[in-house]
Structures are given as C-alpha cells and as structure tokens.
Length: 364
Image (cartoon, rainbow, N blue to C red; front, side, top):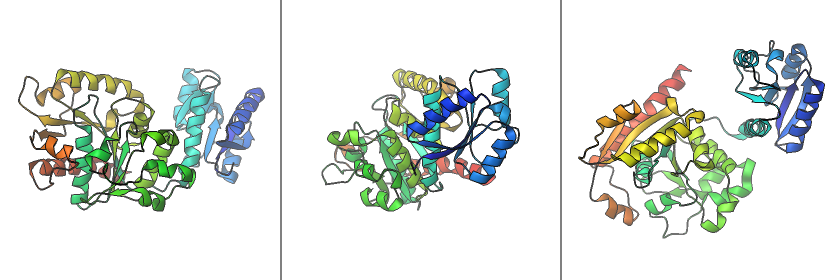
C-alpha cells in the first residue's frame, strides 16, 4: 500500500463518499488519506497532507489551491453546471459515478505511479503507420540514428511487443539480447540503471529497449511500458517509440505519452484511408495538436505528397525518397548510412520534430 496514490476525497453525499472510498481503498492502487464534506475542509486537507490527487465534486472546489494537487472531478450525473465547474477548477478529468469508476481508477493509479518517474527532459516521439509496409520501423530506427548522429542521447523503445520488428531491423536477432521483459520484476522500482542494463546499444550511438520473446509476452503490460517511457524520458534527450499498426492498448499508451506523433504514409489510397480511420479512432487521445505526417518511400504516381495536405489538412514534415538499397540493408539488419541522401533527410526531420516541443517547453 506504500505505492498507492494518496487521495483526498471530497463529496457532499455521505453514502456516495463511502462507496467511492471503499472502491478506491480496495483497489490496491489508491488510499484515501482524508475526506471532506465542504470546500473549507477540502482546502485544509490538501494543505496539510499534500496528496497525489484530489477526487472531488466540482461544487466543493471553490477554495482548491491551483497546483496543489491534480484534481479529478466526480459527479453522480453529468450536467452543464458540473462540467463548467470542473473546467473552472482546472480538473484533469471528469467522471460520472459509478459508470466511469474504472476509468477513474486508471487515472488515480497513473498519478500515484508518477511520483516515482523522474522529471521528463526528453522529447518523446511516437512513430505509427496505419498500413503495413508504409515504413514505420524504417522511420523509427533511422530517426534514432539521426538523433544520435546529431549529438543527442536517444532511446528507441519497441512498443510493438507482438512482432518485435526493431530487433530484426537493428540486426540484434542473431545475438543474445536483453528485452523489456527483464524489467517486469522491478516494477515500480524501475530506475535509469535498470533501463541501462537491458538496453541494446547500436553502433550508431543510440540505445534500444527491445520487445520480448513470444514466450515472455505475458510478463509485460502497458503500465510497464509507461514506466519505461517515463524513466527513459528522464535520462535522455529524445525518446523514439516504435508502435504497432493495430490501435491496441500498447499503441494507445505510446500515443498518449508522446509529445509528437508521426504518422507514416505511403503514397497510395489504402494508406491514406487507413490513416484517416486511425486518426479518427485516436481523436480522444488528443493526438490532433501533436500529429504530423511523413511520406516514406516516395515514388512518382497518381498520388503525390501534395495530396497529404488535401486529405489531412497539413503538409508532410518530410518526404523520404525511395532508395532501392533499403530492402537489402534491412534484410541484413543494417541501417542506411546517415551521411547519404536519406540520412540527410532524417537529420532535417529530427531537427523539425524537436524544434517545436523545445519552444513549447521554453514558453511554459
């Protein structure tokens, strides 16, 4: 229970407060350290106990001290008044009890675990392709190489454990490598030292956290992935997340944790259609403001890079030229040299991806 999130609970209805208290305490990921029946009691409890999070109905948050602790608004029904109250109080989430109790628990658990994740210094970039063969693995691995060549410390994390394509793309399949599964036993105690022990070091200078063997897939989950991303982001300049095509829990976790999301497109109708569906499916993850496009393996055809703007409303951040040597290099687990034409394209892409987040952090 020492690892549980410490919660101050503030609800006017006593019977509802008891239900929520018992639910959170029995979950094993949260512990209610105080309850409050009015805004004065809430303010006092927050000042004295410094909880990890506040779970309260919006009407009791008038005296909530901004920045004292993250606020999760809870109500027994959704109304315009309660939603406005939650917005005014700066709530990080709004939940209806009991319908949204599992979602509430996920947010509470994340806030508790966040205490032991170091402060993020890295720009986290998730690379996704909605169509197989568009070049997700190619872009992710070569982005990592470009960052390392540019002098940035970079960690590449394979967030597609089912297929583990990064292992093969880096030529690590033929050697005895350690994987993310070896970090499962340390759980909440995960540190940079643990991460460094299992990381595969590529000759280009970046580190990789590789997917586990099929026999060890059950040992890893999305919470472990989230913690690995957090620790990596506290120890490197850039973290690149290689995601799977399917919008499963692993991919959604990676997209949620990313500062920038790169959608890799092929210049064909099926790729554009698949990307459109993926973007619509992920709209609730807030990828809109973080989303950018890269065209991979561009060749002349009916669909051109200019069509990216017509379909998606944004120009591609990079158009990577087709290179006939790439398949042969990939078959042998080798990356394209970073000094060539493709390497220069990735160097420009790396600069573009890190420029905007850096400006945003400075402004904040």
